[in-house]
Length: 115
Length: 113
Image (tube, rainbow over the protein chains, first blue to last red):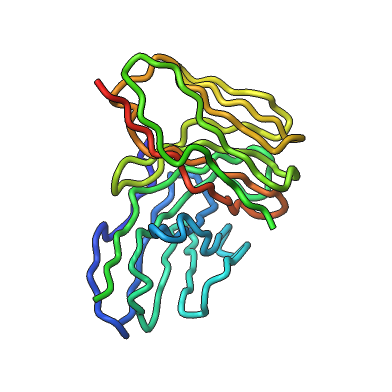
């Protein structure tokens, strides 16, 4: 069974540009969550989607947005990039949402560098 | 507000040693706790998931325990190997209609051959 895939793996952008990252969850999984990982802040929750609906949102500015498609694939978009957005963006998939047993599986991440 | 702490921040041990990594959390109202490992520049690999009603879980050389009332979890690694070198992260899920995980800061483990 294929794992969580993320594309692209590496991305270099300049300040002010926008970027779209993609995540394909494990087949059959309907929940996708996004996290940002930086050396200073560690792993921080961005948002979660389940059945094309946003379930929860972390404490990030409105420049960070996401969506989920009917096949459970998800994209996140960051507009007007800032230097501080340089990070490893991780996507996690899970079978369902809101149940007591819910193991989450992470993809390899997209390394975004903003110059 | 839930806070998750991992001690020690870094650990270096000789190959073959048994070791314990610690994770503590401030709010005991959790749904589950998950341990991950992360190799440099890579994603997270799930190691063990402990539901709030469980006391421990085992997988191979790994054993994780959970004491909700004291807000603690430990990850025990038996007979450590150089391939175990990585950053180990614990994460708690608070519950409700969300899968949001709150992560600790991690323990960087180096196993010396």
